Amino acid sequence: MTKALQLAFILIAGGGFFPLPASALTEVYLSQQEALRLVCGTTKEEPTYEPQTISGDLLEELKKESLEPEDKSVAHFFRCPKESTKKSKLALIDAQVGKHLPITYIMGFDEEGKVTELEIMVYREKYGSAIKRGEFVNQYLGKDISNSLKVGTAIKHISGATISARSISKGVTRGLYLWKHFYSGQ
Image (cartoon, rainbow, N blue to C red; front, top):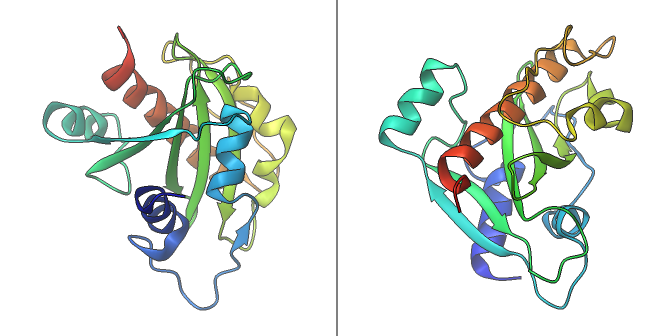
């Protein structure tokens, strides 16, 4: 794994810009490598790390929509290898604060900006981890920037995980905005 990939995972998984209290119940469901394999498939080539700078008009737009990222300077995109057998062309590893602590997730995009995969990688709260289940995350598959992702109407919430569900919806919406800004029209 390249140093850039290792650094990205350390930062996103909580070693960098997300200090964790000792009492946090961190559950790591997927490593960065496992998550990228799920989204991009297994090939001889590794996904290519493509950090995208978040600044200026984009940052203002995200703030206006209440979608400001935890890492305000960079979006951690990965380009899937061309020979991938999966639908995903790009992956984004991001984090969104749940009730108190960040939830790290990966989402995949096809060439049209539709969500192809969504997986929870790291969960740090005591309650609400049910959002990692397929019946919740699968609701986002096929969605794009034109779809509402409001929990309670377009997305069914999970009892006991409402705050986490809203947080993931916010993160997925931000991911779709980022895809549109950096990759639509390519």
